[in-house]
Length: 334
Ligand SMILES: *[C@@H]1O[C@H](CO)[C@@H](O)[C@H](O)[C@H]1NC(C)=O
Image (tube, rainbow, N blue to C red; front, side):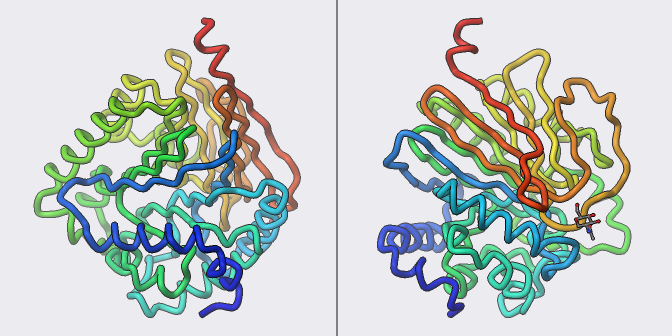
């Protein structure tokens, strides 16, 4: 047991939550979306978002982790969200892969980060043993770890819908190159996997009574970075998000931080993919709706109340790069 998880184990509420989520993992149902209740007993929900990080501390991963810890100290987040690409280059080799400790447990050691981490899978995670990342064995090794393919976290103020985007992207199937992907649980019924998830997401969003609806996935919907928009997601997810008044789509995949606004709906796109290797130097700053773009390392904080949401990007030094606030009142007044 890592020494850093000591304070976490002593937190009874977190332990109970962990046990419940672990049970949820074990009793996996046919539905694509698992539900987790993580009700926040305060008038605001606060969390951190990091993506594209697992590089054994290299490429400023450790530096970003240290600043997350410091900002987390002030913020006191309810949990941390990882937008995927948790372990480079090729996911985990199995539950005993030391990369789990080298890239996660031994890096995010700050006290303020010993909260539940809600992880989704990125395309690089699919290049390794996916079942390992989803395994409760990892949650036993490090109790802040929680990874599922697609799931819903209801916090009361906001409902957060985590979606598994990699199986939607055609090129990983049609042009995998030298990379191999672990499609267990996705193929041979890929179309069914996709349609089940889209159907479940649509009905869960329709049923949601939360003030704020947030969708989190690894891949970009819209991006000024080198990956650009993900056409499959624009086709399959965007109509569902817009049709159900989703406030925010949060992703990684491009190794940078950026905010793009919609011109035809209230949906705001935030990329938090600056967890380690960045500075690719390929971008299109003329992208429609682009409000902010930073090609380097960074992370994001989110604070949400019944009426307002405040999102802030920080860089590798913990310096504020960008702030964005949105209000429910403004939208209803329009
Ligand atoms: C680490 O961050 C600093 C400050 O942004 C930057 O100058 C440097 O290039 C980064 N290192 C890597 C490997 O990205």
